[in-house]
Image (cartoon, rainbow over all chains, first blue to last red; front, top):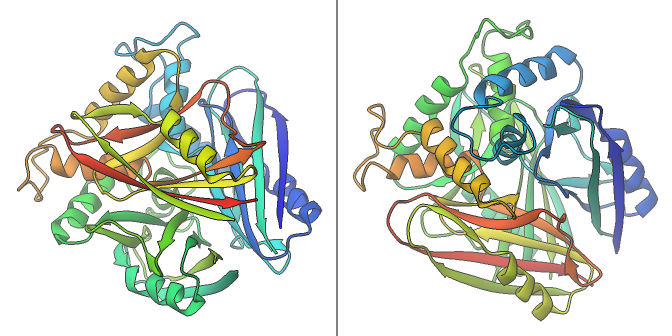
Length: 138
Length: 138
Length: 138
């Protein structure tokens, strides 16, 4: 069995967005109870991460760390037509990932207790973001 | 065909653990000879990497590099209830990956000659780690 | 349905190589119209990324950023028998990814408008690189 659907999100600027519930709903709708759920973000300045889902300071620390690792407006960037956050967003995306697969077991997304699925918007302005979901299994 | 199994490991602290053999054994048990083997670590402070399997200094260098890139106990971390390595472990996980797929071809995991599959424990203390394996194919 | 093929490339040294077209051709050949296309690079010093496909300064900036993040010939590297770029190449591979899945929808690789698939050669000399492609779906 195979099921495909797009998830569409509006972001309100840079930061992490918990999409675990929306992914779980697509899995339920697919009626596939064992297999793989593949997520693919159709953009190069937002990414997907698995992150601790309980303490929100984890994601604040993550934002602060990334802001230091990949500086906005670095003087070495040539690609800056769309603003000082544009090239940084591309680099941040590549250091994380745009494609992720999750196990489905006994009808549920088989995450660990403390794991959540997050979309990470890397642009400072709000954007519309599409995630292509493909579920395969039985 | 679809086959699912959990692999369980006890780590003895931060470092890389070669799990290539254990993954190969699950693939053999599945009797699937062509397809995909998906690995998913159910934790947010340990990750999966593909790494050179011959010279162990590669993984020592990797450990040393990562210790400099993501410092334990950085003063910017708010999330430090579980110790100075906790937030660093979350960041290290996100900069590597928790979800990985491998090709199965002619009954074997189709790795390159120098490739091994490693679990990377990012916490300094020992932990129990689960990897959900999902194999699909024919 | 399941289809497997190897893609073979010769690189001319460090840099990004657009392989979107070659991947699209394998998908077309597979006759699978909905599903997942899995790419797996059988090496530990080259990787796969999704990147902006229009402005080539994005990839130049990316090369420059990575050259600063992971320095060639760092004095802390023990693994340097093959040259000053060897250990850096392993680290660069691990910070990006060697395994990637792409959605196939309506007979096509369902990339976003600005997304391309790139192989990133991390060694400074030319190399032969194999990518194992596994396509599953219907």
